[in-house]
Image 1 (spheres, rainbow, N blue to C red):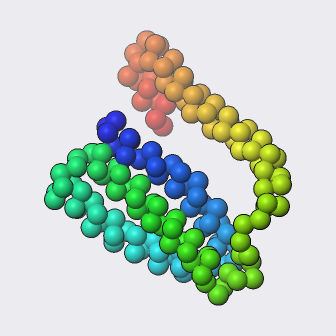
Image 2: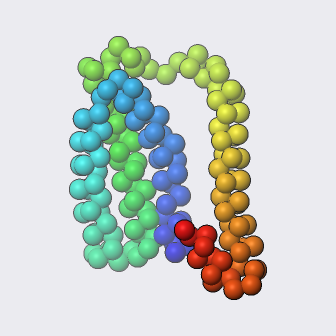
Length: 146
């Protein structure tokens, strides 16, 4: 399983690039290109996964790497659409330094959100550990699943 996760590491950065582009398009009610790009990437993903697993025999790492590559294909295709499309000409004028002027405020909000998500995950894991220490832990853990 660790090999698969190593292949997924680049996907984290693709997420960080994909979601702002996707929200930019959705805010303008431009959703069809997202669906077309995702569908094409899915078809390409199926082919690349088959090649990685059965032809090249790259195993779990190959499966994770192909998944990361598929997400990067989506990011690149959506970015090209935003830059080249006539529908985005009035809203996308390129990168400017002024866009990064309030980045510190956004970072503080993101850091607080990350802490909340960590605490939420840790809370559940600690609850499971404590339930495992109680008498009849199997019943206690089953009760948590309800």
